[in-house]
Amino acid sequence: MANQVRQTGTSGMVKAVTVADYIVERLAAEGVQHCFGVAGDYVFPICDAVDSSAKVKWIGCANELNASYAADGYARVRGAAMLVTTYGVGELSALNGVMGAKAERSLVFHIVGMPSYQNQRLHKIAHHTFGDGVFGNFVNLSAAAACCHAIINPENCVVEMERVIAEARRNNQPAYIAVPSDYALSPVMSAEVKPIAPRSNEMALQKAMAIIAERIKNAKSVVAFPAFTTLRLGLQKQAQEAIEALGCPFVTMLMEKCIIDEGHPQFAGMYAGAVSDPKTRQIVEGADLVLDLGGVNLNDITTAAYSAQLDMSRFITVGLDDVRIGDEVIASVRLADVLSELAKLKPPSAPYRGARQELAPVTGNPSDKITMVALYPRYAAFLRAGDTVVLETGSTSLGMAPTRLPDGVRVEAQVLWGSIGWATPATFGIALADPGRRTVLITGEGSHQLTANDIGAMGRFGANVIIFVLNNGGYLIERALEENPDWTYNDLAPWNYAELPKALGCADWYTARVTTLGELDDAMKAARASKTGAYIEIIGGKMDMPPILAFAHSRLKEMYGGTP
Ligand SMILES: Cc1ncc(C[n+]2csc(CCOP(=O)(O)OP(=O)(O)O)c2C)c(N)n1
Ligand SMILES: [Mg+2]
Image 1: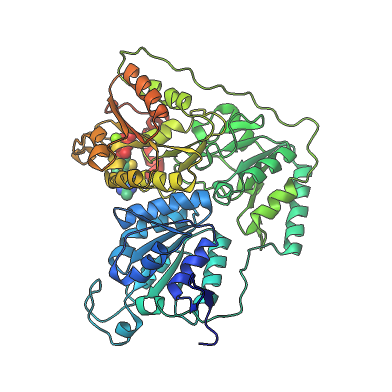
Image 2: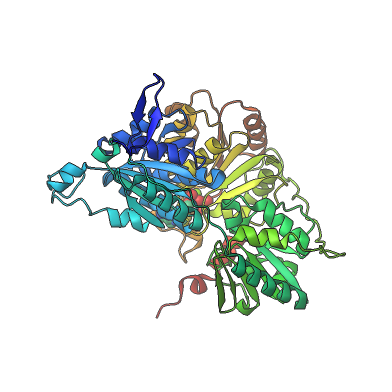
């Protein structure tokens, strides 16, 4: 008992801290105040530790997939999130969301309660297994969704928690922490460790900065890409300061929309290969030096079906933990340090000044049906500084991409992983993570059908979000990505969307179903004024798609490859 970690209980008695309590306390110290999950017997000790914690609140979700998406959203704002699921059946349901967090670099601590060590040793036939007495069947699967993992026991708990926290922070990706149920209730054994904060190797940082400075000096034209990772790490301000010191134009791609205000004088537009404004395209593709601040993701979506013409030899990519210049990689250099070094540069006397793009005018008559041409500028006019808008994969996010949004609006989207259904629970997590901002969800109805049941949790936990659901009679984006738009698999069960909040326990929410622009304008005003949540179902046209989607439709071969 001598080396058990102890804390003083309220009664003044000294009691040993259990593994479960320690894990919850340690994650609370990482800034986690909410724990998303679904309970189960193997994970009861962890759930109990959360429920009795004064620092972390249990947020029960309708299912583990929703919980994982909510945790991803929360982590994007808070820097870390806690997700708790039960062995096998629970953790496996969460994997899509945890893997999405890995792809999009969002730090979710996934805690899973396992059957007890005793029953594992005895190879008992237990529920949530294949009935084979084997208990390692799922560890590798869940571990593959994370960047690191640990199976916790009372002796390794303190050391392993520091190791996985440091590694997860280094990569800003999920960590998987599995805890047998009897160990979870055992007292933690103390160990001499200090939290490890990721930092740069000073020599490597100096070397990288010298090369970057030389390349900047010799470049006739420089353009900066602030990457989505700066948002995940809370480094937007530092990225902006670096760009202001550089004085060069900066562009954003879909994963980075509004990462720095679109009204910033150095903003040179959104870049998406061939569908970019020609001036933006020239600035990017004609630049001598492209400073990629954080590691942008040049995927089929962000490059508009690989239509970007980028010479990678002109790139300097500052990753989370290294700097890449051509084929040279300088390891152990942190993005935050490079940004603060860049911010020390003396700004040029005549920095780049872009042509300021104003918000698109709101058009159409009150009795008109709702077209996408009329809808996107309305979203832009509706959003304001202090809003976080969550964009679901689908036709709308592609339509919103080139739509200029007001300054002070934060945008979240899951562009790379692109798992539909993500945005609804992610909105919930984001709203809980920062109640000081208004969280606005813009989703298609098809995506919404996957995870709409957690609207109930939004009401239960007082997340006063504003939800716009575009009901366009099916999977429009899929109709556009095929030669034949009329395959029946792109049709949906016709839900009464506007009635969902009431059915799911949010009786005091403002709800509306709108078919004309006048109704939409009135509903938007009412939603903004609502003190509780708001939910607006927008009836759109079955084939009314944004121009970028029409462009993709013309490049199906380039996107998917031709028939061999
Ligand atoms: C989990 C998952 N399943 C399937 C897909 C394929 N998919 C991509 S978009 C989409 C349809 C989206 O439809 P909706 O939300 O109604 O938006 P719309 O394009 O109609 O505006 C589907 C099925 C996916 N990306 N993720
Ligand atoms: Mg749809």
